[in-house]
Image 1 (cartoon, one colour):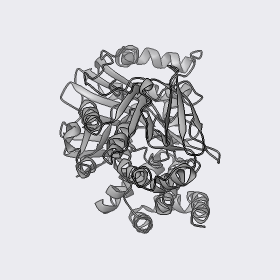
Image 2: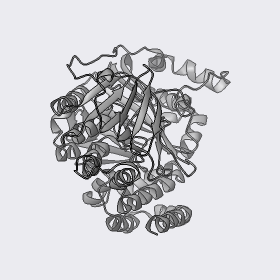
Image 3: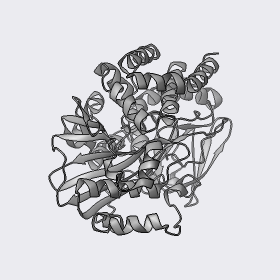
Image 4: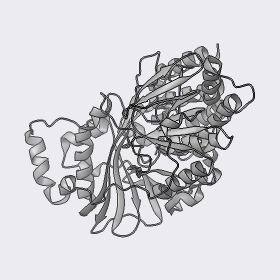
Length: 494
């Protein structure tokens, strides 16, 4: 969800992160022969579904900022190289450089605007001192459980101003002396106390530590367990419409209604098994961000089907798209194992395991954990002890993933595994009970700030608020994920 359960919309693979891989290729599904059902759907949706063929009117842009570029011929000695200039990379560079550590950020296009739309709870950004980085906020959010029940959440939500956030992070980097290098990293090598990167421009850069912030498709981070991720997949558009039915003082966090599929028996049957919801941010009466999202599926739900469901939903809501300003194709790996800890390359962002396994939220959490990782790096590279090599790698990885945080992540992964077992009705019952919890608990769960003990209390409270049918879901569908979680907790704490 652009971030529910996520950054908003779910965090996409950005241009600075996107490269061909089996994962990224999932975003571009091959054309198949149209079945009679598909042909019928195309005919029915022609009037309202033509937005799928509209090309985005917005053009990629770059910021006009003066940043210090690294001159490789100067043999400038670096302490830290960060691969990637997304929110994770720039936030870490800004934070680490405050300690006087020599940092270089390497990216194919450091000044290009991020293509993603990010959403976050306003209180999360306020806690980070980034409340001025929203370009639109809504005082409330709504969740449509079904046609007869809607929940209103008294928690402000906002769309992150991508330009404002990137400029703020870049200005912090510049004032702290961060260098930038415009290139794509092809290879990472390691010696006992120094690591190096080989770039596509032929330059080799060396530093005491390499941090990979280049996203999900990175090949530089190692795993020692099967990567059995769940996947959040979504199709989103920022569109000019003739009209829409949404209240301008509320964003739609989740709309689980399925009446729009009444005349689409195939899609309705599929949605009943693997449901999708609508996520919407109305800016005015004619401008709205719309996103059809599969919260989590394994294997990943067909991207084509996501779009077909969105066409049916917008047609049912009477939303006629006049133009598409931005288009998003989002695929977020969720849950699965953490990277090998420790290893020679550090990670932050989508490839580090900090995506919320139950929701897909990542941006606010990344911005919050970057200072934590920066402190660990500074303890090694900014001290007179000059800790290097394996001791450095161990300290920084354990700084990002101490035992308590690993155990909490196991609990969130348990939540993801449970959601994977729920059909549409089970999912509706789950969120009906979830948003009835004390706000402290559902706020904390979505923002990844509950302790393991608090998560246990949340589980008991959720069971108490659940309907009898939902309790039956918990009793019959949770044991296997629960046993898996307990086993993983035992391994982590040994």
